[in-house]
Image (cartoon, rainbow, N blue to C red):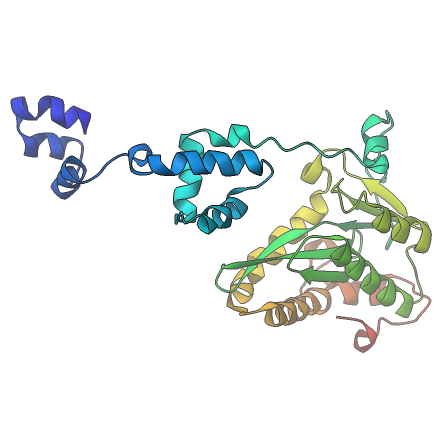
Length: 303
C-alpha cells in the first residue's frame, strides 16, 4: 500500500497495482474502509490487559469467556492475533512445575537409561516399544491419542488403547490388554524390556508401579525423544499413513475405536512384513517361535 501510494502519480495506479499483483478492489478497500488491527480493537486493549494480569496462567481459550462476561465480543482468531501483535504473551508468566522425583532422578543421573540400545538382536518378546501418537478423525476435526505396544522381533502389537486425551488411564488400558494377550499364550512381561520416551505419563508413579512392580518388567527410556524410539515411530507412521482415510471417516470415538481394532487385527494377522520373511506377525510367531501354548489362537486375543 505504501509503495503504491508513493509511485501511483508517476506511473499510474493500474501499473503500480499490476506490478505487485494487488487487486484494485483490495486497494480501495484498504484505502477507504480498512483500519489497522491495533486501531480497530484499541478499546479492547485495557480489558484484555486486566484479564491477563488477573489470570496470568490463562490461555486465550480461558481469557475469551472472561472478557465476554464483561460484554466484549471477539473471536478466537482476532484474540490470538492481538496477543501476538501487542506482545501480551510476555505477561502470561506461568510458574514451571517442580520435577517429580522420578524425572529429577532421570535428569540428574549420569548413567544412560536406554537399556535396549546395546541389544543387537533381541529375542522374540524380549524388547517392547510404546509411545503416544495423534489420530485425527471426523474429517480431521477431532483428535485422539493411540498407544500401541509393539514387540521388536515379531512386530506383534500385543496391546493398544485409544482415548481423547493422552494420560495414564490410556497407558494402563494398553498395558492391561498386553498383559491379557501375553497371558493367553503363556508368557508375561517379567524381566523383559519396555522402551519409551520420558513423557510425564511414563515417569509417573502409577505407570512405574504397574510396569516395574506389577508386571516385573524393566523400563528403558529414550534419551533423545523420538530419535531414540525409531521402531515405534516407524510403526506409527506406517499405520497412520495406510489407514488415515479410514480414521478420517470415523464420526465419533466408537467408530474410531472400531476402525483401529480392525486395522490392528489386519496388521497382526494378514499384513506381510519384509523383516519377517514376508509373513504376518501371528504367522511368524506360530511358525518360528516356541510358545508355552502351542499356537497363537487369534479368537482368544483381546482387540
